[in-house]
Length: 201
Length: 263
Image (cartoon, rainbow over all chains, first blue to last red; front, side, top):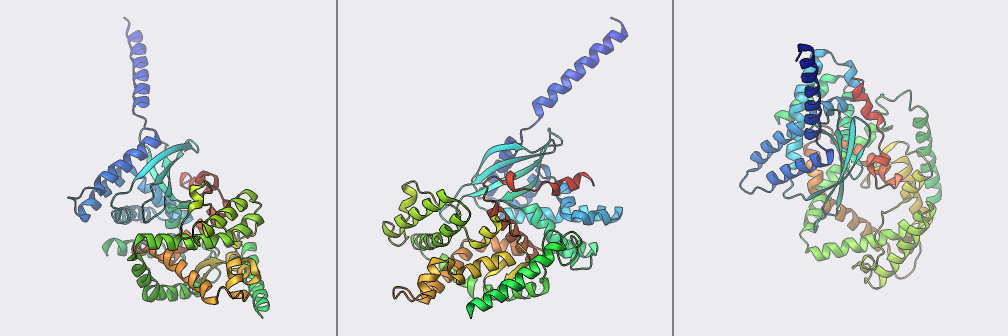
């Protein structure tokens, strides 16, 4: 076998193999959400975990399943165009800490949320929306929860927004950040200071 | 006198609503509008918001916590009675929105639950196939007619609203659009008193507050600007309700997300 033939065969095998790998490991957004929900539920129902332990475990789930940087950029809206490279770096660092603290402490309040994941709808190449339902309890009615999933990398889908009964949590955050900046004469450092204050409280 | 006050109020609010709508593009990132939100009276609104929070801490939250200690069947029954009364406001709005089927279904629900369900304490209508539909009000009806929300407002005691919703809710009620208000406050029917209306409204507020004690606490603790968070939640919720669509994807503006791509 000539070297040329060998190289062609080898490349062909490599291409086929990589496409097989791609297909076998690409994760359907619907299944991805279900697995994240299951992991979180498992932690929340563990009686032998303290609240602090639960928060730490939830943080690690968020780190691997949420597009924190994407949410951070989205939350800044048009203001991110005015950031210097240093400010951007600092913002993303502070935002991640803020997000994880806020996200985990919000979720840790739930004891045993029963979420059923239903259908998914591909919006475009970048985003897919997954629908789910938080089952009604004696105290509270059923709640519709939709998840916006970034599918730019099909092998690693990530959550970028949670929409509860039509209310986008990312949008709430964006409008809150905008308000903080606007009420400080457009000074982005005021937002950074508020984020740091939140992290340290 | 009420008519004069309402006309003046409507005039002022619509004037501001038109002014802000007309300057949307120029001020899209100005302090007045803060993006998509037209918060024309932000300073006053924040003052009233702080007042409402004080009132909530002193009165409504303790009452809501006390209410939560009542046995579940009592709370459930109270919630059912209030939901049944709200149907009186929903039906005329179903009709005004052209939702004839829903209007008929809600009328039957009201008739069945008021009689068989003993003044609405029980909900036999759902068992008979007349499922509860979403509540509707005049603010939502105005929205479905294409009237813009106008400036965001925070009303004393009543909380978040917009120019359109305030005119719809308060104006619609005073003008005779709420049958429950008509038989209790507006007309002397000898069967009901003003207390029945204001009592039911207050209980409705406490019932809502009791269902959301943890959510409110959580939101307040995790917000850097609680006022802005509540404003966003309120406005998004109203927009979703006006679209009357159960599918989130039908009501979302994806333009927002495309911004990230251009970063």
